[in-house]
Length: 257
Ligand SMILES: *Cc1c(COP(=O)(O)O)cnc(C)c1O
View 1 (tube, helix red, strand yellow):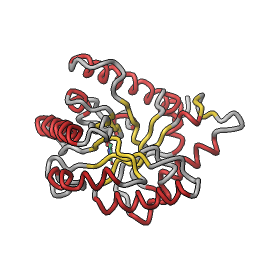
View 2 (view 1 turned 135 degrees about the vertical axis):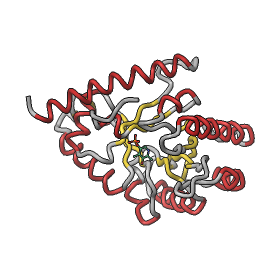
View 3 (view 1 turned 120 degrees about the vertical axis):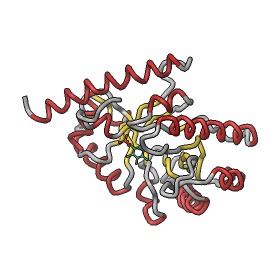
View 4 (view 1 turned 45 degrees about the vertical axis):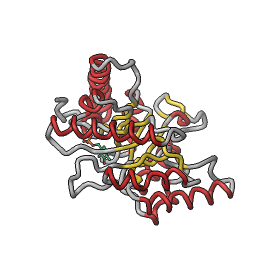
């Protein structure tokens, strides 16, 4: 068996173990089966590993650098032959999101490629994405406003980007009026390696969402993007609708806690 075949099997086995954990976390928090999306964060792997993940059943991927997002999409479109399929999946069913810091000079590379941008971390960035997307919509190059999530620094760690909760409360009415973006929810990251703190962070994101949803009933804030390899079960228990799994999905030797 080739190394890649062995990897493919390992990723498929790992996916089954992850999905069991996901289902169990949903069940114990009284949530509906299938009510959380599972993103495979492919930022550290190459196109063949993404193909292995598609073969294992993943359809939803995340990248944190615009160049990598473009490279993965181009690699997959080359592989999708005349029938438009990669590893048995219709390439049109594959979704890639942008989850990392976005510089304004890279916005155009991401528009129309990322189904959703998770990392809108300031009003300035939101305005820049909105104006470029609105221009592309006007030119007929983009079907509609760019779906985005607003990144929130719930835990207050200095190293994390995102709106401080109070800054988001103050900026939200301006954000909601930007014509080139469509806000679909909030995103956060918990501090590493502290389970109790992870629960507090995710609960804080949910509470902030509930508060904003009550104040701005016309904005759909259904998506809560939170939970990574080390804390996805805690995130599901606190209401996450989208978990972003990197190492646990792609590194078969990463311990599934
Ligand atoms: C890398 C990354 C992830 C996945 O991290 P793991 O801990 O490897 O699961 C999730 N979200 C963002 C924004 C990332 O940059």
